[in-house]
Image (cartoon, rainbow, N blue to C red):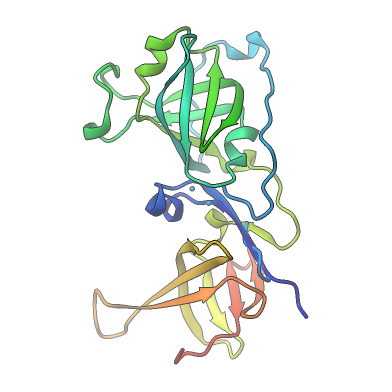
Length: 246
């Protein structure tokens, strides 16, 4: 029997549909490693950042930024944050010491939020799991008022800072947009996003219908070894055992 692919959540749009875009990983051959949720979750980690590393600097927004969570409230009285991750296994939030922030949509903005809404960099000194949320500390936030001003702000991290995946495991963000073909070489479409069924991930594959602008064919293909033959990130292609008429 061939191994099954696995996905790990870390997707921007896929996870955002369910919670706005995070980073999950999806295992292949039945494992897929989304905006980050893993099949084999790892425990959260805390790590201090030297004070010298927290000096202010211009925001150099990463080209590979992926949205992974949202600040929901202040935590404690010393500038801590309570964060909603967009993945059940948010390793990207734990592994990155630099969170890049963008302001929320106007309707969700905090009345204390500064005007202008320019992106900013938040240097994280510690982050840990607390229930279904994450609590984090940053020396950039001296008190609760500063943390409350960021309520609703969206958190991005560089894809490069994501933890390495195991063999046969993929982040959702890396699968979205890949071409999907069957064993006969027929094109089925491209991965629009992924669905999490609990037992495994499902590829949502869409393809525009020729001669009918605005209409598309949708296929839901389980991301498991029984159907997924190969995932090639280099060729940006997934080969599946799936008929055109399925």
